[in-house]
Each structure stands twice: as structure tokens, then as C-alpha cells.
Length: 348
Image (cartoon, rainbow, N blue to C red; front, side):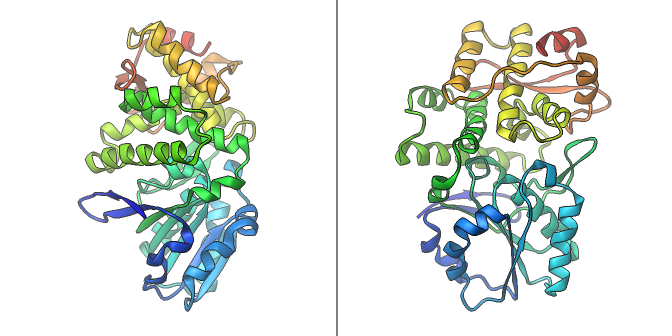
């Protein structure tokens, strides 16, 4: 079993990469009760793979509809209702068993239930395995934007099993690759070259290598900046534009990773105009996204409305926009308040 330590001043934990059936740690959890949060598809396909590891435990299951449109306060209330009905206490545990949406909501609910109880993540999508399940960022969407309500609440552990990905549809799988590309562009040019040369991550070896590398990059970032006051903001490359696209499309047209891909293209256009990347570097990123069949074209119907919505981004401060832009391939820069006309031009 491979383990990557998320080394924090407080609340450090491990990300385990193995088969769930071999994770003895789950059998050793000393919690009074366990509430599993999942969705219908994951429950039907995989719930029996983790229940044997919870033998002799009092286990309850809360099944929620999955998707960004359900990542709201109503779903949080459903989780909390289950916790109260089953009389969870401060020594109880919540398990997030699903994709990024389930993980974000489960962590948020665990963080506010009785002022905070333990939770662990068992992510079942590529996007959640390489990004969303690690780092303690939890939350929900509302009418004003994505993830604007939430808290930092670190999991006690994360258990990753690549076998879950065998039942993931191709679109969901590709959406996860956009988050892998994001990390390579901003932090590791050799990793970027690996993704350029890999055979679509079709082999288990290449896939596991990409997952491990992505988690190692994120682990190092979180160790330096747990609460996103500096370098951790770079993990939002493509997200500032992408979140507005998701909002405008009512979280129903694009998967999160697809919106990030579209956001990367617009961020690159801005970076190109500001002289942060060359045309060749921009083309390489575009071609890599296309290689993995991610969307790269999005028509902005009302540029001024889009621009106004950018200010809802959590990185904006004092009514000033902040963008994460690549500085070549393998590095990044935080750019504050670029000229409005350049941002509008970058929208296409």
C-alpha cells in the first residue's frame, strides 16, 4: 500500500493508494457510529466493497442525488437530519463515498455537526482522487456562485482505489484529467511532458503514476499553505473563469472538470496577452486538453455580465480581480487587477 502524508501543523493525515478490501485501517477505526454519505450509482456499484471493512460497527447510509445542482443547503440538511436521527455524537464518523460533490458536502456537514466530527474520504471519481478529496476544502454552491459557503475541515484519512474508476464513464474520467493538467502546467514541466507522451492514461501504471504525482504536488502545496493565503491559490488555475461558466450554465451543461478546461483556455489567452506564456506554450496546453478530449471552446454571450460575475470569485479582494496564470509551463503567477479590456478580450 502506498501512503502519501499530508503534513500539517495540526491534523496531519495520510492518503492511501491501494485496494479498499486491503485497508485494515478501516477495521481499526474507534468511532461510536459511522454515517456513510453516498449517491445511488456509487452505492449500487460499490457499497459492498467497503461494508466488510466496517464489521462490528454501527453503520448507517445516507444516499443523496449527485451533481453540482444538488450541492446545496438542502442536501446538507439531509445529511444533518440523518446524523441527528441516528444520534451521532462527537466520537462518530462520517465517510464520504463518491465524487467531489459528495466529498465537499460530507466534509462540510462533518465540520458543522456538533461543531465538528471526524470524516474520511473514499473518492470514486478521478477528479476527486487527484484533487477534491485532499486538502480539507469543503462547501456548497448557492445562487451567487460555486463553493462560496464552506469551511476548512481536514479529513482523518483518504483512501484511493483506482479500481473504482473502471465503472466511471469516459466523460467523467476525462473531466478528472483537466485537474491533473492544471497541476502539471503550474508546478511541474516534466509531469506536463509525461502527460503529452502518455497513451491517454489507459494503462493502470500510467494512471496510478499520474494520480500519485498529482497528490504529491498538492500535498506539498497544502503543507506550505493550508488555508489558501498564498501558493495554494495556484490550484485554482482555470477555476476563476470556469466557475462563472458553471454558474451561467446552472451547473447542468458542463462537469466541473470540463468547465475548468474551458477556464484554462481563457486564462491562457489572458496570460498570452500579458506576456506570461508564449504562443507555443499556449498551443501545447491547448493540444494537451484536446488530446484528452476536453472541451476548449465556449462562447460568452454577454462579456460585461461575465466580467461582473468574476468578482464573486473567492480570490477577489477589495473589489480587485486576482487570476492564477501560467508563467511558462511548470510555473505560475498571481496577477491582480489586469486591465479590464484585456480580460474582456480573453473571453473570446
